[in-house]
Image (cartoon, one colour):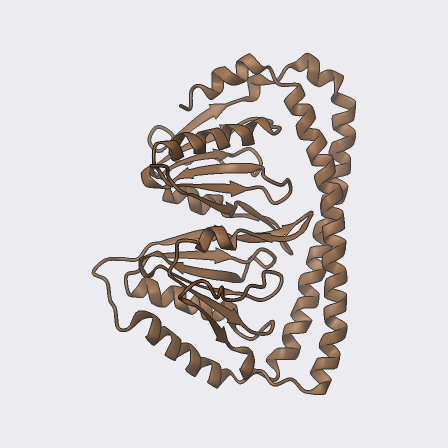
Length: 353
């Protein structure tokens, strides 16, 4: 019997730069392989190979994807044995428990210096290009966040917070039904979606496919969706439930989803840019409507129309710059792969299995 593969993003392109959850995932693991080096796409292929190796043994794994380059994996986590394999040079993450939990496998010596020198000028030019498009992309995302703050200010003026609190308390009572577990809950951090060069992308369907109940929150920006999820997280942990807190792909101070595995339940922000609706073929899907508590006047609607257009413009600019950034990064990684000594690479990779 084969294991299951669950897909997450390991990093997100946010209004505060490229953010990742790897430090948190490292804390979950009992054994961590830190893969160090200057990598092309060979490292992603190796991480896939590692994952499939354990899946064939019947173990469940998680793949963590790079938001910049489609289908490129940065980490593989074997959940059933809590073993993590992490490309840890970019993003830069260092081991903290050498000699016990952490192991280093270095691939730096696998590069062929002669081949690298032939590609040196091109790599230098591409690095400068990538840096330029990177800065422009994240400048646009910072602008988008500031515009989004203006959007939230418009909706918050007309939000009935008391009614929201009443709805939230009723929902929590329904979810937990007085249950208290005789243990301490554990908290895990994940990313299910992010902006990419192809627009907003997420792994919602893959992540939630085995859950029995999915609650789809519908509400306007700034009307308490993330705050509700954070409170649910706290309530679940207080009652002894394990929680996966799934972070927002644009604003790292916000969360988009809470998963409570022991209840086989998730509740998430099902509005744009990750807009979903209940699947009529599934039982347990339902909408949590908090939009009903926000009655906008013509003044707010007019203001929001203008703000939303500026927001979409900033996001589209970020996507266009992300495409150029990804093109430069893709060629860099291809050249690195061309400059890799295959026999040395295979020798180092064999240290992992």
